[in-house]
Length: 604
Image 1 (cartoon, rainbow, N blue to C red):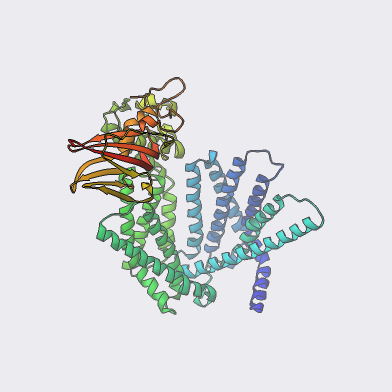
Image 2 (cartoon, rainbow, N blue to C red; image 1 turned 90 degrees about the horizontal axis):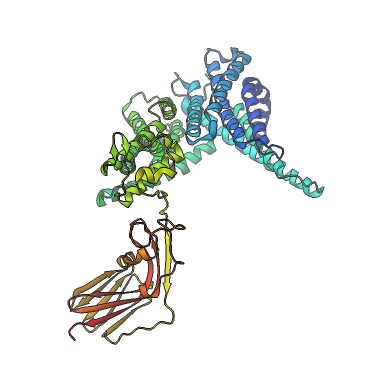
């Protein structure tokens, strides 16, 4: 082990010169990137951090472009060693400069669209880095991926250990000699390790195009990790997803929300792992079994994911996130069909198609941004058309809109405001702002997402008395919130309180005689405590619809309500309560309630 480590270090030192000659343009860009990051966090820098942030992001794309240009130049000749390194690096420098300038210009304002487009371009360039040396080859991609992954791990470990050593030395010197060094020295050291040293060590291990990497070079440690740890975990995860799929088929309740991401990222990760298992398939039975059956096993799970995603899109339209999930899911489905049905099974198809999808998803009229804006505009038009609010292509204000649809409209506008621009909404007038919301739509703007406004109210009776002389029975439910269901009986009367639904039921001779709901009761008095604007408390000069009136406590006289049935008279006296009030029409949420229940027999 000691000799192997020594040989590895010697090889890395010996490769420093050739690496610098081969990738000097890329090394120069990593130094510029690191200097930019150091400048951003420097005490002396007083400029805009966004400007340097744009430069840093643009340089990342430039570094990837330089790698691709050098590998493309080296792949252009039958004998890579005959290519002058100077020519390849000059081409890389021109390519990187163009990409850096283009992405820097594109990142104006660091908007959501600009950053997302930059990420898509970087993913495309990253995949191109794997494609170029292996395009047109037979089966070289898998071992190329293994080689670069191993080199990346080594580069990270060496850089991390070197950083920890330098940080320890700096801290010791700072303590022993009372130098009072700034914490920024540690941060800047980390930038150098992560921005210059680690990429340089990684570049030292990039094989030249045309270099054959035999399967025998597969690291034993990585082989054991993949075969005996990673793939068994993925097999168990697959089994769990199939159990959940079986549950769906039995209950016929289709999944929504997180399930799409659970399946999607599992499938993406496992597809990547296939590149590590294919070289081992001939020498290891389990690796061969996993490689053979995973492309079949994942297809039903992708169908479950599409069902979940379809429900979300049906109700809420397409957004960028749903677009990426849908497109990536379709790519996975296509790749699984290809691996199952194609006899050639050229593995290079995987990164080539993914690179094209990454690029096309962020540019052109079919991009995630264009499709999402179109979908959300259609969604807004559908809601407004439902209430007859669209005339001659513009919105006519209307107050007769259900609270749920009001929130949907607000959510759509909030989406455009956060991710795009309000000017991208087709129906609103030019120059529209949220200050004009009520004028344009006919109802006040409600912040989407969090149920706003929400008002907490509570009540606790103190030093009270009540006349109960007319009643025959008293049932004590003052501690009922400790149980999900509480029942009390006297003679032939059975009183039951359900803590989950907050409903009271009274039975007489085994039959339900009367029922009451605390949510309905609170709704009936809500207008006394929250400004409505339509009824009850009107907005004045200092309050507006949705504001709370009072200090958050109910009045004792409002904490009594009565009921009547054919044979019974009922009075409910609330002793303590906590609930949430929503002024937009939703049912109040009762958190807990304690009460006395008085019952009188009629005709007795």
